[in-house]
Amino acid sequence: MNADNTIIDIENKYHELFHGNPLCIQAPGRINLIGEHTDYNDGFVLPAAINMSIYFAIGKNNENVFSFYSLDFGELFTFKDGCAISDTYPWANYLLGVIAQFKKLGIDITGLDCVFGGNIPIGAGLSSSAALECGFAFGLDNIFECNLTKYDLVSMAQKAEHEYAGVMCGIMDQFASVFGKKDHVFRLDCRSHDYNYFPLEMNNHIIALVNTKVEHELASSEYNERRKECEQGVDILKEFNSSIVSLRDVDESLLIENKGDFNPIVYNRCHYVVCENQRVIRACSALEKSDFREFGKLMYQCHEGLRDEYEVSCKELDILVEETMDMEYVLGSRMMGGGFGGCTINLITAGYENTFKNKITSIYTKKTGIIPEVYFVKLGDGVRLINQ
Ligand code: GLA
Image 1 (cartoon, helix red, strand yellow):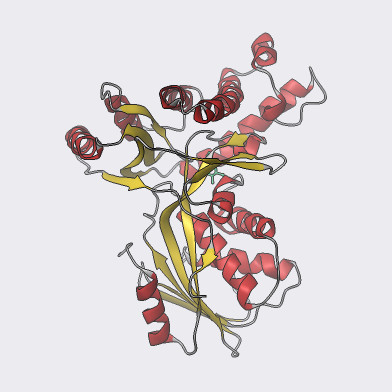
Image 2 (cartoon, helix red, strand yellow):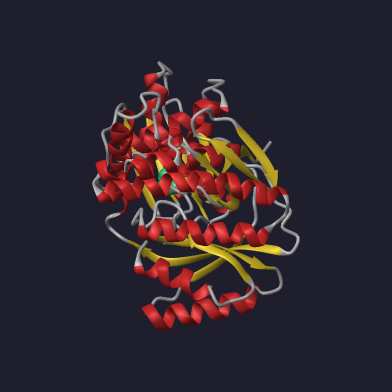
Protein backbone atom coordinates (compact mmCIF):
# COMPACT_ATOMS: atom_id res chain seq x y z
CA MET A 1 0.00 0.00 0.00
CA ASN A 2 1.29 3.44 -0.90
CA ALA A 3 0.10 5.93 1.69
CA ASP A 4 1.98 8.92 0.36
CA ASN A 5 -0.18 10.16 -2.49
CA THR A 6 -0.53 13.81 -3.47
CA ILE A 7 -3.45 15.65 -5.05
CA ILE A 8 -1.70 15.41 -8.41
CA ASP A 9 -1.67 11.62 -8.18
CA ILE A 10 -5.35 11.67 -7.23
CA GLU A 11 -6.38 13.98 -10.06
CA ASN A 12 -4.37 11.98 -12.60
CA LYS A 13 -6.05 8.78 -11.54
CA TYR A 14 -9.45 10.44 -11.79
CA HIS A 15 -8.76 11.47 -15.38
CA GLU A 16 -7.52 7.98 -16.19
CA LEU A 17 -10.67 6.31 -14.83
CA PHE A 18 -13.49 8.83 -15.27
CA HIS A 19 -14.74 11.74 -17.38
CA GLY A 20 -15.02 15.45 -16.70
CA ASN A 21 -13.32 17.76 -14.27
CA PRO A 22 -13.56 16.81 -10.64
CA LEU A 23 -13.72 18.99 -7.58
CA CYS A 24 -10.54 18.61 -5.51
CA ILE A 25 -10.63 18.53 -1.73
CA GLN A 26 -8.16 18.22 1.12
CA ALA A 27 -9.26 16.85 4.50
CA PRO A 28 -6.68 16.70 7.31
CA GLY A 29 -5.96 14.23 10.10
CA ARG A 30 -5.65 15.47 13.66
CA ILE A 31 -3.57 15.45 16.80
CA ASN A 32 -4.83 16.01 20.30
CA LEU A 33 -2.58 17.78 22.77
CA ILE A 34 -4.58 16.78 25.82
CA GLY A 35 -8.13 15.72 26.76
CA GLU A 36 -8.30 12.05 25.84
CA HIS A 37 -11.51 10.01 26.16
CA THR A 38 -13.28 13.10 27.42
CA ASP A 39 -15.23 13.97 24.26
CA TYR A 40 -17.97 11.35 24.71
CA ASN A 41 -18.24 12.39 28.36
CA ASP A 42 -19.30 15.94 27.37
CA GLY A 43 -15.86 17.18 28.43
CA PHE A 44 -13.01 19.25 26.98
CA VAL A 45 -10.41 18.41 24.34
CA LEU A 46 -7.52 20.33 22.79
CA PRO A 47 -7.04 19.05 19.23
CA ALA A 48 -5.68 20.54 16.00
CA ALA A 49 -5.76 19.59 12.33
CA ILE A 50 -2.36 18.65 10.91
CA ASN A 51 -0.46 18.84 7.64
CA MET A 52 -1.22 15.21 6.79
CA SER A 53 -4.34 14.79 4.71
CA ILE A 54 -6.57 12.72 2.50
CA TYR A 55 -7.12 14.27 -0.94
CA PHE A 56 -10.21 13.70 -3.05
CA ALA A 57 -11.17 14.19 -6.67
CA ILE A 58 -14.93 13.90 -6.92
CA GLY A 59 -17.53 14.53 -9.61
CA LYS A 60 -21.14 13.71 -10.46
CA ASN A 61 -21.93 11.29 -13.25
CA ASN A 62 -25.37 11.09 -14.75
CA GLU A 63 -25.50 7.31 -14.83
CA ASN A 64 -26.65 6.53 -11.30
CA VAL A 65 -23.46 4.56 -10.75
CA PHE A 66 -21.22 5.03 -7.71
CA SER A 67 -17.51 4.42 -8.24
CA PHE A 68 -14.94 4.86 -5.47
CA TYR A 69 -11.25 4.32 -6.09
CA SER A 70 -8.80 4.12 -3.19
CA LEU A 71 -5.41 5.04 -4.56
CA ASP A 72 -3.64 3.93 -1.36
CA PHE A 73 -5.10 0.42 -1.68
CA GLY A 74 -5.30 0.38 -5.50
CA GLU A 75 -8.90 -0.84 -5.29
CA LEU A 76 -12.05 0.13 -7.18
CA PHE A 77 -15.50 -0.31 -5.65
CA THR A 78 -18.52 0.22 -7.89
CA PHE A 79 -22.23 -0.20 -7.31
CA LYS A 80 -25.61 0.91 -8.61
CA ASP A 81 -28.48 2.13 -6.44
CA GLY A 82 -28.33 1.20 -2.78
CA CYS A 83 -25.47 -0.71 -1.21
CA ALA A 84 -25.09 -2.52 2.10
CA ILE A 85 -21.94 -2.57 4.23
CA SER A 86 -19.04 -4.07 2.26
CA ASP A 87 -16.94 -6.89 3.76
CA THR A 88 -14.55 -6.94 0.83
CA TYR A 89 -13.60 -3.26 0.89
CA PRO A 90 -13.79 -2.04 4.50
CA TRP A 91 -12.63 1.44 3.47
CA ALA A 92 -15.75 1.88 1.32
CA ASN A 93 -17.99 1.67 4.40
CA TYR A 94 -16.91 5.12 5.58
CA LEU A 95 -18.13 6.56 2.28
CA LEU A 96 -21.32 4.50 2.29
CA GLY A 97 -21.93 5.68 5.85
CA VAL A 98 -21.69 9.30 4.73
CA ILE A 99 -24.05 8.77 1.77
CA ALA A 100 -26.54 7.18 4.18
CA GLN A 101 -26.57 10.37 6.29
CA PHE A 102 -27.34 12.53 3.24
CA LYS A 103 -30.15 10.17 2.28
CA LYS A 104 -31.59 10.42 5.78
CA LEU A 105 -31.91 14.16 5.27
CA GLY A 106 -33.90 13.46 2.11
CA ILE A 107 -31.05 14.59 -0.16
CA ASP A 108 -30.98 12.73 -3.45
CA ILE A 109 -27.42 11.55 -3.99
CA THR A 110 -27.25 10.32 -7.56
CA GLY A 111 -24.24 8.74 -9.26
CA LEU A 112 -20.72 9.97 -8.57
CA ASP A 113 -17.08 9.13 -9.17
CA CYS A 114 -14.46 9.60 -6.50
CA VAL A 115 -10.73 8.94 -6.24
CA PHE A 116 -9.03 9.48 -2.90
CA GLY A 117 -5.76 8.84 -1.10
CA GLY A 118 -3.18 10.73 0.88
CA ASN A 119 -0.44 10.67 3.45
CA ILE A 120 -2.13 10.02 6.80
CA PRO A 121 -0.73 6.73 8.07
CA ILE A 122 -3.64 4.33 8.57
CA GLY A 123 -4.17 2.87 12.05
CA ALA A 124 -1.78 5.38 13.59
CA GLY A 125 -4.43 7.18 15.64
CA LEU A 126 -4.29 10.29 13.42
CA SER A 127 -7.95 9.97 12.41
CA SER A 128 -7.60 9.00 8.80
CA SER A 129 -11.16 7.69 9.03
CA ALA A 130 -12.53 11.06 10.20
CA ALA A 131 -10.62 12.75 7.37
CA LEU A 132 -12.18 10.31 4.91
CA GLU A 133 -15.70 10.90 6.24
CA CYS A 134 -15.35 14.67 6.50
CA GLY A 135 -13.69 15.15 3.12
CA PHE A 136 -16.31 13.02 1.40
CA ALA A 137 -19.20 14.75 3.21
CA PHE A 138 -17.72 18.11 2.22
CA GLY A 139 -17.44 16.86 -1.38
CA LEU A 140 -21.06 15.66 -1.53
CA ASP A 141 -22.26 18.91 0.00
CA ASN A 142 -20.45 20.80 -2.77
CA ILE A 143 -21.28 18.72 -5.82
CA PHE A 144 -24.93 18.29 -4.87
CA GLU A 145 -25.19 21.91 -3.65
CA CYS A 146 -26.77 21.10 -0.28
CA ASN A 147 -25.54 24.14 1.68
CA LEU A 148 -25.09 22.23 4.90
CA THR A 149 -23.26 23.91 7.76
CA LYS A 150 -19.80 22.86 8.87
CA TYR A 151 -21.34 21.52 12.04
CA ASP A 152 -23.85 19.42 10.03
CA LEU A 153 -20.93 17.84 8.20
CA VAL A 154 -19.15 17.04 11.47
CA SER A 155 -22.19 15.43 12.94
CA MET A 156 -23.00 13.43 9.79
CA ALA A 157 -19.41 12.20 9.59
CA GLN A 158 -19.56 11.11 13.24
CA LYS A 159 -22.81 9.21 12.61
CA ALA A 160 -21.22 7.48 9.61
CA GLU A 161 -18.51 6.19 11.97
CA HIS A 162 -21.10 5.00 14.52
CA GLU A 163 -23.33 3.28 12.02
CA TYR A 164 -20.93 1.94 9.41
CA ALA A 165 -17.69 1.38 11.34
CA GLY A 166 -19.36 0.40 14.63
CA VAL A 167 -17.18 2.71 16.75
CA MET A 168 -19.24 4.88 19.10
CA CYS A 169 -16.71 7.70 18.85
CA GLY A 170 -17.09 11.17 20.31
CA ILE A 171 -17.01 14.29 18.19
CA MET A 172 -13.38 15.37 18.48
CA ASP A 173 -11.83 13.82 15.37
CA GLN A 174 -14.46 14.99 12.91
CA PHE A 175 -14.58 18.42 14.56
CA ALA A 176 -10.82 18.82 14.18
CA SER A 177 -10.83 17.70 10.55
CA VAL A 178 -13.48 20.33 9.71
CA PHE A 179 -12.71 23.23 12.09
CA GLY A 180 -8.90 23.02 12.22
CA LYS A 181 -7.00 26.29 11.75
CA LYS A 182 -3.41 26.76 10.62
CA ASP A 183 -0.96 27.24 13.53
CA HIS A 184 -3.75 26.92 16.11
CA VAL A 185 -5.04 24.33 18.50
CA PHE A 186 -8.57 24.70 19.78
CA ARG A 187 -10.26 23.94 23.03
CA LEU A 188 -13.60 22.32 22.29
CA ASP A 189 -16.36 22.01 24.82
CA CYS A 190 -17.90 18.73 23.69
CA ARG A 191 -21.20 19.55 25.39
CA SER A 192 -21.98 22.99 23.98
CA HIS A 193 -19.67 22.63 20.97
CA ASP A 194 -18.24 26.07 21.74
CA TYR A 195 -14.61 26.33 20.75
CA ASN A 196 -11.72 28.75 21.19
CA TYR A 197 -8.66 28.81 19.02
CA PHE A 198 -5.27 29.22 20.72
CA PRO A 199 -2.34 30.26 18.56
CA LEU A 200 0.31 27.68 19.22
CA GLU A 201 3.30 29.95 19.26
CA MET A 202 5.69 27.14 19.51
CA ASN A 203 8.81 29.25 18.83
CA ASN A 204 11.16 26.95 20.60
CA HIS A 205 9.06 23.82 20.64
CA ILE A 206 8.16 21.06 18.21
CA ILE A 207 5.45 18.44 18.20
CA ALA A 208 6.80 15.01 17.39
CA LEU A 209 4.63 11.94 16.91
CA VAL A 210 6.11 8.50 17.30
CA ASN A 211 4.19 5.71 15.60
CA THR A 212 4.43 2.39 17.49
CA LYS A 213 3.39 0.67 14.23
CA VAL A 214 1.08 -1.54 16.26
CA GLU A 215 -2.70 -1.52 16.25
CA HIS A 216 -4.11 -4.04 18.71
CA GLU A 217 -7.30 -5.87 17.81
CA LEU A 218 -9.12 -4.77 20.96
CA ALA A 219 -9.26 -1.12 20.03
CA SER A 220 -12.88 -0.71 18.92
CA SER A 221 -14.51 -3.21 21.31
CA GLU A 222 -12.62 -1.79 24.30
CA TYR A 223 -13.48 1.74 23.18
CA ASN A 224 -17.20 1.00 23.23
CA GLU A 225 -16.75 -0.78 26.57
CA ARG A 226 -15.10 2.31 28.14
CA ARG A 227 -18.02 4.39 27.00
CA LYS A 228 -20.42 2.05 28.76
CA GLU A 229 -18.32 2.03 31.94
CA CYS A 230 -18.47 5.83 32.05
CA GLU A 231 -22.26 5.68 31.68
CA GLN A 232 -22.45 3.18 34.54
CA GLY A 233 -20.49 5.62 36.69
CA VAL A 234 -22.92 8.43 35.82
CA ASP A 235 -25.89 6.22 36.82
CA ILE A 236 -24.35 5.68 40.26
CA LEU A 237 -23.52 9.36 40.77
CA LYS A 238 -27.00 10.49 39.73
CA GLU A 239 -28.29 8.89 42.93
CA PHE A 240 -26.33 11.50 44.90
CA ASN A 241 -26.99 14.45 42.66
CA SER A 242 -29.83 14.25 40.17
CA SER A 243 -28.49 17.14 38.10
CA ILE A 244 -25.53 15.02 36.90
CA VAL A 245 -25.94 14.15 33.23
CA SER A 246 -22.40 13.08 32.36
CA LEU A 247 -18.93 12.84 33.93
CA ARG A 248 -18.41 16.46 32.91
CA ASP A 249 -20.69 17.42 35.80
CA VAL A 250 -18.75 15.47 38.43
CA ASP A 251 -16.30 16.87 40.99
CA GLU A 252 -13.41 14.71 42.04
CA SER A 253 -14.51 15.14 45.69
CA LEU A 254 -17.99 13.72 45.01
CA LEU A 255 -16.42 10.73 43.36
CA ILE A 256 -13.96 10.13 46.21
CA GLU A 257 -16.69 10.45 48.86
CA ASN A 258 -18.75 7.76 47.15
CA LYS A 259 -15.96 5.42 46.13
CA GLY A 260 -17.50 2.62 48.21
CA ASP A 261 -20.52 2.44 45.90
CA PHE A 262 -18.40 1.73 42.84
CA ASN A 263 -16.95 -1.37 41.33
CA PRO A 264 -13.20 -0.51 41.33
CA ILE A 265 -12.87 -0.64 37.54
CA VAL A 266 -15.75 1.78 36.94
CA TYR A 267 -14.37 4.02 39.70
CA ASN A 268 -10.96 4.19 38.01
CA ARG A 269 -12.49 5.00 34.62
CA CYS A 270 -14.53 7.84 36.12
CA HIS A 271 -11.62 9.15 38.18
CA TYR A 272 -9.45 9.36 35.10
CA VAL A 273 -12.08 11.28 33.08
CA VAL A 274 -12.87 13.74 35.88
CA CYS A 275 -9.16 14.52 36.38
CA GLU A 276 -8.49 14.72 32.64
CA ASN A 277 -11.13 17.41 32.20
CA GLN A 278 -9.37 19.45 34.89
CA ARG A 279 -6.05 18.88 33.16
CA VAL A 280 -7.37 20.35 29.89
CA ILE A 281 -8.39 23.53 31.70
CA ARG A 282 -5.00 23.75 33.41
CA ALA A 283 -3.19 23.01 30.13
CA CYS A 284 -5.00 25.91 28.44
CA SER A 285 -3.91 28.32 31.19
CA ALA A 286 -0.36 27.03 30.83
CA LEU A 287 -0.55 27.68 27.07
CA GLU A 288 -1.80 31.20 27.65
CA LYS A 289 1.28 31.82 29.79
CA SER A 290 3.55 29.97 27.34
CA ASP A 291 4.43 27.68 30.23
CA PHE A 292 5.41 24.63 28.19
CA ARG A 293 7.09 22.93 31.16
CA GLU A 294 3.76 22.84 32.99
CA PHE A 295 2.00 21.76 29.81
CA GLY A 296 4.45 18.88 29.42
CA LYS A 297 3.91 17.71 33.00
CA LEU A 298 0.18 17.54 32.37
CA MET A 299 0.84 15.39 29.30
CA TYR A 300 2.81 12.89 31.41
CA GLN A 301 0.02 12.84 34.01
CA CYS A 302 -2.50 12.21 31.27
CA HIS A 303 -0.50 9.19 30.09
CA GLU A 304 -0.33 7.78 33.62
CA GLY A 305 -4.10 8.02 33.92
CA LEU A 306 -4.70 6.41 30.53
CA ARG A 307 -2.31 3.60 31.42
CA ASP A 308 -3.28 2.85 35.01
CA GLU A 309 -6.89 3.98 35.43
CA TYR A 310 -8.43 4.00 31.98
CA GLU A 311 -6.31 1.04 30.80
CA VAL A 312 -6.19 1.90 27.11
CA SER A 313 -2.41 1.99 26.69
CA CYS A 314 -0.21 -0.94 25.67
CA LYS A 315 3.37 -2.02 26.25
CA GLU A 316 4.65 -0.35 23.06
CA LEU A 317 3.13 3.04 23.93
CA ASP A 318 4.39 2.78 27.52
CA ILE A 319 7.93 2.07 26.34
CA LEU A 320 7.89 5.16 24.10
CA VAL A 321 6.65 7.42 26.90
CA GLU A 322 8.93 6.01 29.61
CA GLU A 323 12.01 6.32 27.47
CA THR A 324 11.48 10.07 27.03
CA MET A 325 11.55 10.68 30.78
CA ASP A 326 15.28 11.13 30.98
CA MET A 327 15.58 13.11 27.75
CA GLU A 328 15.83 16.63 29.14
CA TYR A 329 14.69 18.15 25.81
CA VAL A 330 11.36 16.32 25.99
CA LEU A 331 8.84 18.37 27.98
CA GLY A 332 5.91 15.98 27.75
CA SER A 333 4.90 12.71 26.16
CA ARG A 334 1.75 10.58 26.17
CA MET A 335 -0.25 8.13 24.12
CA MET A 336 -2.71 9.87 21.82
CA GLY A 337 -6.18 8.96 20.58
CA GLY A 338 -8.23 5.87 21.39
CA GLY A 339 -5.24 3.77 22.50
CA PHE A 340 -4.03 0.15 22.10
CA GLY A 341 -1.46 1.30 19.56
CA GLY A 342 -0.99 4.24 17.24
CA CYS A 343 1.20 7.19 18.17
CA THR A 344 2.58 9.01 21.15
CA ILE A 345 2.60 12.80 21.04
CA ASN A 346 5.72 14.50 22.35
CA LEU A 347 6.52 18.11 23.07
CA ILE A 348 10.22 18.65 22.46
CA THR A 349 12.64 21.56 22.45
CA ALA A 350 13.39 22.82 18.92
CA GLY A 351 16.83 21.87 17.66
CA TYR A 352 16.66 18.36 19.13
CA GLU A 353 14.59 16.78 16.35
CA ASN A 354 17.33 14.52 15.05
CA THR A 355 18.65 13.61 18.48
CA PHE A 356 15.15 12.65 19.55
CA LYS A 357 14.38 10.73 16.38
CA ASN A 358 17.62 8.73 16.48
CA LYS A 359 17.45 7.95 20.16
CA ILE A 360 13.79 6.93 20.33
CA THR A 361 14.10 4.87 17.14
CA SER A 362 17.09 2.96 18.40
CA ILE A 363 15.66 2.25 21.87
CA TYR A 364 12.22 1.25 20.61
CA THR A 365 13.64 -0.99 17.91
CA LYS A 366 15.92 -2.67 20.45
CA LYS A 367 13.10 -3.25 22.92
CA THR A 368 10.33 -4.34 20.54
CA GLY A 369 11.96 -5.40 17.28
CA ILE A 370 9.76 -2.84 15.49
CA ILE A 371 11.12 0.22 13.70
CA PRO A 372 8.91 3.16 14.67
CA GLU A 373 8.14 6.15 12.47
CA VAL A 374 8.66 9.70 13.73
CA TYR A 375 6.70 12.65 12.30
CA PHE A 376 7.29 16.32 13.09
CA VAL A 377 3.86 17.80 12.43
CA LYS A 378 2.60 21.30 11.70
CA LEU A 379 -0.90 22.52 12.43
CA GLY A 380 -3.04 23.11 9.37
CA ASP A 381 -6.48 24.22 8.19
CA GLY A 382 -9.61 22.09 8.19
CA VAL A 383 -11.30 20.51 5.16
CA ARG A 384 -11.28 22.72 2.06
CA LEU A 385 -11.45 22.94 -1.72
CA ILE A 386 -8.08 23.05 -3.40
CA ASN A 387 -8.71 23.80 -7.07
CA GLN A 388 -10.66 27.04 -6.87
C1 GLA B 1 -10.87 8.22 19.18
C2 GLA B 1 -12.30 8.74 19.00
C3 GLA B 1 -12.48 10.14 19.59
C4 GLA B 1 -11.93 10.21 21.01
C5 GLA B 1 -10.54 9.59 21.11
C6 GLA B 1 -10.06 9.48 22.53
O1 GLA B 1 -9.99 8.99 18.41
O2 GLA B 1 -12.67 8.74 17.65
O3 GLA B 1 -13.82 10.52 19.53
O4 GLA B 1 -12.82 9.62 21.92
O5 GLA B 1 -10.49 8.29 20.53
O6 GLA B 1 -9.91 10.73 23.07
